[in-house]
Image (cartoon, rainbow, N blue to C red; front, side, top):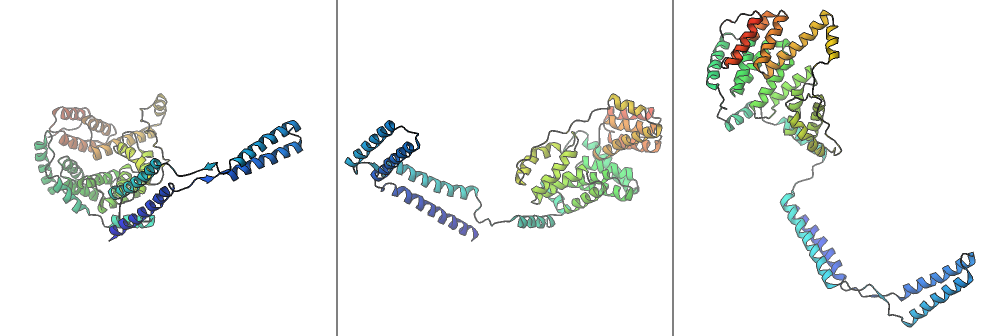
Length: 419
């Protein structure tokens, strides 16, 4: 019913426009030429009056004024002798009229075709507040985590093959059984979450990471929640569920500038009809991102269009964030001038960042070896031993990487035990 009314309304408007324009074109063929004598006579009389005024002001000589008056009078006499001969206006040429009618027809028919093909007949008016209310309703009623996971698993039932998958599956199966016996082993559950994710078992990876956070309790770092959020969104094929949104809130309460949480918050708003909120959040995220941030390319490509949709057409995409460089000579000199306590604090920060990155994102064997050596230097042998065990599990099927890990452990004075 709404579409019919829209079509009918458009047809009436188009018909009205066509009638008005068509009538104007047809009338152009019936316009008679007008007599231009009176208009010309008025012009000449005005010229005579102007000559008299110039003569009175002294800006015109008597001889010149007399000559001009004689010339204007002659033209008036000529006009009188040919009264009715001067005609202005008249009907427009037939070809011009038909061309104009064709343009009117093309405009009306073409406009109707465009309206039907790319328009939205029947689409009701939606004020801004109503659109925002509808987006909020969409957000409240979106699918839950379990439903989205089931849909994604049904769409991609086959696991992704890669070299060493069979060996990893056997190792993960053993690790699952071991974690049933050692349910309080944080490092074991963390390792299980990472390897379940490598196999594409995202639901199991989410469960294992949730167990890590539960065991850590208040000691769980933001990076643990960020990794859980990553797993949850990957498990749904990229959709941010209400459960994932709850994890976002926990992260932002701890770290308001967390890149992972801001990125997925922007995606959530884009998926629920609020691109304006996505623009605001990703604009802020761009400003705080490092050059190697995994989301940077995506948000840079999206921001200009998001700005246009959000009513900020003058937005200009800023340049890429400057790449971080290594320490300068001044930095090294400043570090050497630090006292032991400040230097130790700096090293602790570097080790903490490396540890968090490897726990959340993984990394090459060189980074794991560096972390093992750093922990040993700091005197944290127990933690270094735990990281060694985790690294040997991850690189068990890669001989060269495993050899590097073992070499670092020997140099650090750690026990290799059984891989």
